[in-house]
Image (cartoon, rainbow over all chains, first blue to last red; front, side):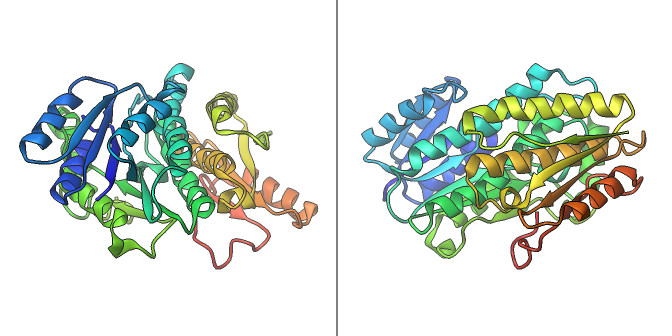
Length: 238
Length: 123
């Protein structure tokens, strides 16, 4: 099985996606800007998987070529998961233009540069999954994040049309996910957020990884240009 | 008073950050000054049939429209969008733009003119 490239692999969702691919027998290239991604690599190797770490700042325009070289060293890749993302929340009237730009640069531009560079090198039958967000539908205090994730969804459709039929491109849009960042929220704030989710809880990172794995699998071989809202029904109510 | 924001056409991926930041600053200044904002889009970009950067820009702007409309609901910010195709009647496009700008209840709405979106995925 050819490799999967997972960006933001040092974070909770990225790690879950990488673990899922490894469990399915796929070699994994773990991409992140920080060294802790090496710990994820070691964990996967200890479990018997083939895994490599690629420490690079995806906001750097040369990053896609670094990732491509490392993927080639793994024998090439068939799957790319654009999961890397950051937040810089503030009310729109108080948000700095630099924070707006940074979130767009990392969450959108870096993902598109990587997709455009790697799409031509993914094997036939390959798949790209963009990790967007339910927030693309609108969220208070996240004008930068909403714009970037909404743009990523639009780009997903265009990428799907551009690279069909050779490569499928889809997106998953998670809602509230149980991560260290979520757990660090003040309890009343978190309770309020959970109360708006019809499922009555945050998602486990593994539940998002499961959707990503499905979209990359042959079970989804006729699915392209689509967005799966994995938000516990939050997009319908709340 | 209304601000009509039209994105620059034909941009590449490396120009998205600048254009979205320009839109962000424009929308913020407009709502703080009490203006309505209508973002004018080409519907082919909303559909995603004219390239990756164009689609990303159109949907990024729609995200901004939703974010500002949601955040300014209580303050009465009027931010919405209209998309049209090359064969859309100009008079009709202007009429819809004016109606969106005047409406207190159309915040975050995209009105799609031209009919090319029918049978395709919604935004």
